[in-house]
Image 1 (cartoon, one colour):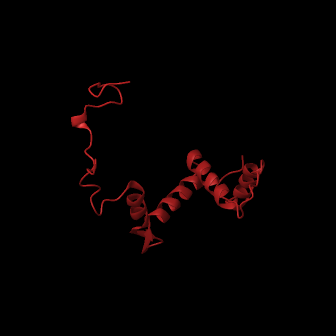
Image 2 (cartoon, rainbow, N blue to C red; image 1 turned 90 degrees about the vertical axis):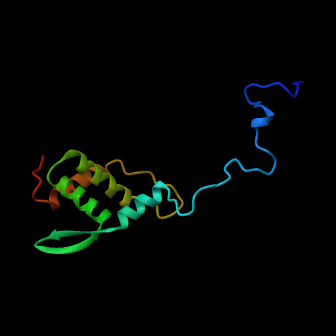
Image 3 (tube, rainbow, N blue to C red; image 1 turned 60 degrees about the horizontal axis):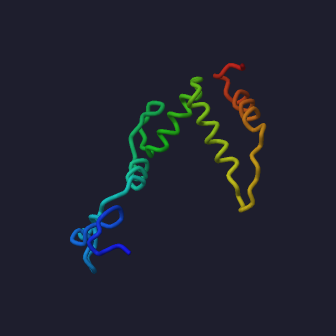
Length: 125
């Protein structure tokens, strides 16, 4: 048996332990403080003004990010193109029921073929 005065790993001195009924965080989390997810969601939902075809309009920042990503993909940049393909796959193949459906193995080549057919700005490879 360990004596009352033994101090070591997992056995802090009695005077430094929390007292009964006393919280370890007496002031707690300040009211109104936001976590990272809340801050990111708020920023992506805020609106910015863009100029498109000579007219100014306000869109959400997340929409502007998607527009930029798709535009970079259409310019032929590899990483944005792959990201767009991944996002399209995620949105098209989300399960609509609780039964897991295995992913299609040939989805990427088929999507690439559709992409090339519908976008004349990207040359066939």
